[in-house]
Length: 426
Image 1 (spheres, rainbow, N blue to C red):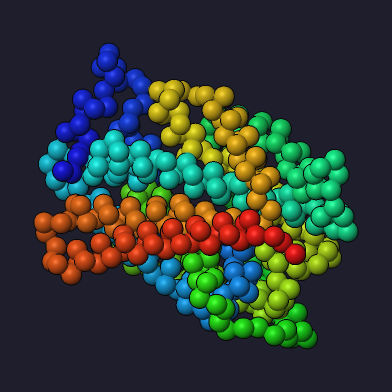
Image 2 (image 1 turned 120 degrees about the vertical axis):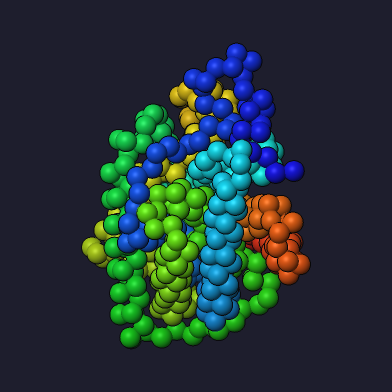
């Protein structure tokens, strides 16, 4: 049975019937400002493009550039379709009597499946956002070690490599940044991070083109079938932005053309990703590293790019963890600020980063285990539940097929990623 906010008030009320505390059905976003079509397109671009793109050249090396591009395109199309399913499901529920405004992915899960639906979405959001931040810490520590002490970056001191010492060094600063209770003071960092990300990608691609002109290493169009699931995981991670679709559609002034705007954004991002991954692989061939920026040398421009990305991801960390804090504080401290839960999460992220040495391997793990569930399984499952009595047999089969295939891809990709992470590195 589909569940709505109004129909489940008793489930979310406290024993005192207080309305001052955040509860399970408290929307996380209220009274959003409307965005023009161009701003909506830009916001979609910013919400999706992230650090995952830096692992695509290494993934193309493992999969082959043709298989990599095909996989990337299929993941982009499926991501776009599932985003539209979320929007369609939200619009259907809001058109029914007795349903209040649905502002977020968690709200939608609560409407469709009650507390279990919201808990499932919240859990995946916590795992995905924390996973993104683990990859940030891996990138920052590995890059700093590569830039400043390249000759001894893999040597051990007192049981730890320089990369792990840098990770521990980041911890106290992240504890301080993540103690900031409001995003207002962190908002300028988001704009800075976006410019650095796009600028760094342009510089890396330009250097790739220059290298290709005089160095043409051997590249393969297809890798083995055994790396397909690994590739799906990284590509899914790179397109992860499903949690922002409903808020962005809420803010859009022209909701009628939101699907078209979303499609244009996804097309642009797909072309950018495919170009970035292919150029990186074409430039370095079998020498392509898990973090492509470590391939571009240690000149002034290269060093500035790498340090800029480190600063970008370092300060993006608390922004990415904010949804985690919202969920935890809403569930366990009635919406009030909790320094302890924040510090424990930062410590947990750091400890996981210490155990995972390879950047791209971890992207594949997060993409396969968490992002596939958020991006493919939940949207198609929610759509199937809500529209099961209204759509034809073909649409029901399509929704069900996406659920089943996504689960198979998720389990297989998770296994493949874990094998890569724990396999001996030469």
